[in-house]
Length: 262
Length: 279
Length: 81
Image (cartoon, rainbow over all chains, first blue to last red; front, side, top):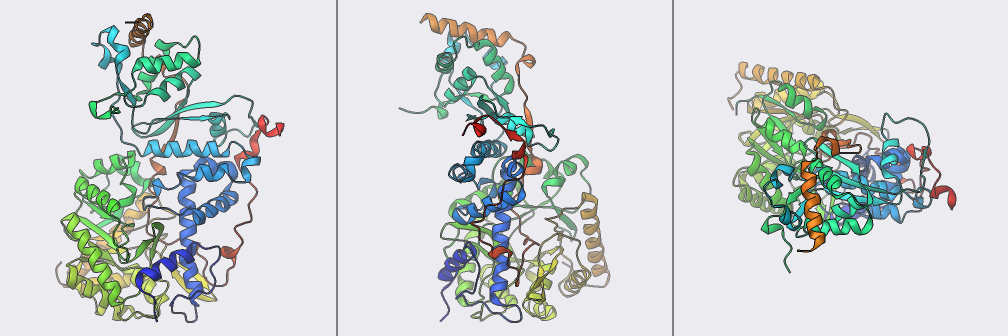
């Protein structure tokens, strides 16, 4: 007796995500082209298209490890963690964690952080473009009230931190990059990733700048952010840093709705 | 909309389209690519001022026995309200079960149960949108042994129950007919032509399956001669309709895509001249 | 009003007088442009192998050796382990 539709669909999804696609119990008609071969077309497309979607999102990881290795990594990931929603730009949030735990991480310890950068760029690209706080918006605010202004980051802006020099690794992966070796060295990275009108981009931040930016959750004041920055970087140049962040256009004054209650 | 030819709007062509605004009947986008803000969505909203749009969803999974994903439905409704497209369409297929989405247009058994499920989902979708949706006939690589209806019979019933439109993909008819050993003329004969709102054209590939050719609907090449003939036969039988040329992989330069659309326009005009029933 | 708050206020005010362009330091890398968009589509992968091809059946436990830009990345913590 043929399965009900719900049961059939559950069984098909399991089949299509399984390690191999042999004979199945499913009521698929076969003729000179066997049922298993027909089902394999769908299985291949599912794995291949999702793998390609991940390659598009994690393009730097893809360039780092090359096509064959990425295909293998991404197919494993797809089978273990298929999408839970239909929007492929939202697929892959847990890929960096998967890489963290992968044996390959012993050989390429920076790989998961590169994936985090790729993901942050993806999220920034798919964030609304907001009109940022400009210097002119603060010109009328009395000096003594400036520290009390509550500010948040623009949509999609985020800080990616790493023990590895992510910006140099990223640069080494670009199509026009020179063939020279990239020495990892001992320095880490603090990258501010954000949306721009036509794309997403990133800049490097100093220690104090990174602490300042990371403080800018809704409800935080400029004073609190400045104190956090001065705490990690003695001699933090607040005028220079704040001018830079204004020029980058990554802050917004908080509206009452933004403020965290309690 | 007059029976014009349009093109699928794809990422590699976005910047050029915004800059040059070449003449074409309408632009088609896949809904799920525009549910998040992005520079691409901004470009589409800009283009919307000069071109009618067709919003073609790929992830609503109208064949899911579990029903529609409410959150996803809400987002698609939001996009349609924002863009006010000339058409909204989806597929006769499914892609979701148990919270897992497979990014494929998976096949359905054509049974009374499936009809009930799809009709219910289509009803909900049309109600949420406040407008008609057209369903595209799928490219099939397999058939289920327990189907009791043919695909055109199924579509006909669905139209009766829900008032949905049909998006007739001539390439999909050819691919399905080949892979499932069906006669495309029989297929066309049983279809309720008045429900057709749009035609689709695309290329396909020929693969090997156990020494036998199997057609793959890859949207990766020019429309083949046999599909142009099937398109002409559809126009002769049902009349001209707005027609979309799809090309989603190995995407050519924009002028090539526009050329294909021009050929489709020619076929529509030829159809009018030969006295096909008016749209 | 604390001395620190006064100092912070003065520093923030000073920032507003600095010329903007000079201070967007560091490479703003242009990346992740519009060409990246659009992963949802509705075609079937042409490289689908139906039939007797065993490619898809290959064990996914096999991990391909990384062979990309990673070959240029040397030193640091990689050599210390």
